[in-house]
Image (cartoon, rainbow, N blue to C red; front, side, top):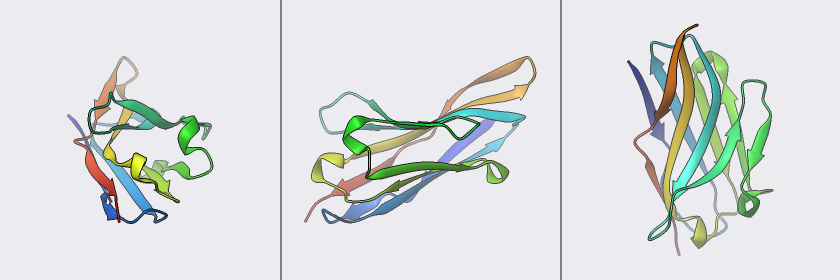
Amino acid sequence: QVQLVESGGGLVQPGGSLRLSCAASGSILSINNMAWHRQGPGKQRELVAVINSGGSTYYLDSVKGRFTISRDNAKNTVYLQMNSLKPEDTAVYYCNAHIEHSPQAGGLYWGQGTQVTVSS
């Protein structure tokens, strides 16, 4: 019914940058919050950044000033610009979105994840 597809992960050196994208497709009436989470090796999944439909944002303390979340509502896409990357940012990054299919129906959907590796 709804699919989230992420792209943009890869291998980058410390101090480098990457831009992740997550595009939603399918039966979409509207999208509320869109977010990025990550799960590092041997760690629990954590919330990295959230953006609501009005553009307000929240960031994990450790990424403030380095990561920027944004969205393009016309494309049903959320982005995560990651600058000054550190080895501890290495993780699988997942997007999710709360999507309404109709005024009475909606749900929380997840992407498949994209690997980000920060290493020299």
